[in-house]
Image (cartoon, rainbow, N blue to C red):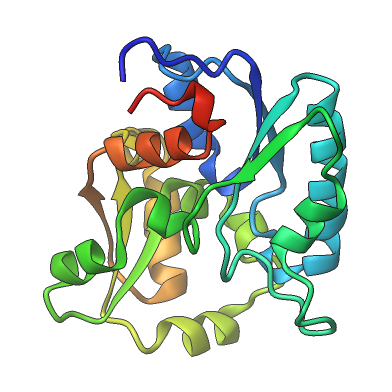
Length: 216
């Protein structure tokens, strides 16, 4: 991956991926301009629609090449208009002179580990998966949920595992141990990290680049 540059790109991403994208930027691997939508807007498709449009318009002021870091499924579900998808929103904002693409995954979990990899890691256990942003921004991600919602949604699982390619969990637990305990109590699930390679996320970002810029 040496020699790859995103300096001509703007990235519009779901806020749940702020920790991973900021890490890549801090370490020098990612030199794109970063814009984010509020974490957890998969539960508010109209709001996501508005924010995504606003951020893509803002990205056009920063770069001619734009990567939308969102998945195809589960990130945008509009029950009022099921034929409207996240790609519909993107297509409406395409215009001559701009390259706009979307990461080719189903959701944020797929950014970090495939379904097969997660099944192998679960080893038959009923596992609820998350990323670091789901914990850090859980006030947004689980906006409007009460204990009854948590019991209904988490009751089918026996454990919660965070896919963690950047060592987020240990640092967060050291600084905010009460947050880990509070989440585990609220979800009635033990939460633990699972280290995964960051290279999958990097390759997904590379794969979303203009083909002429790719150096895989």
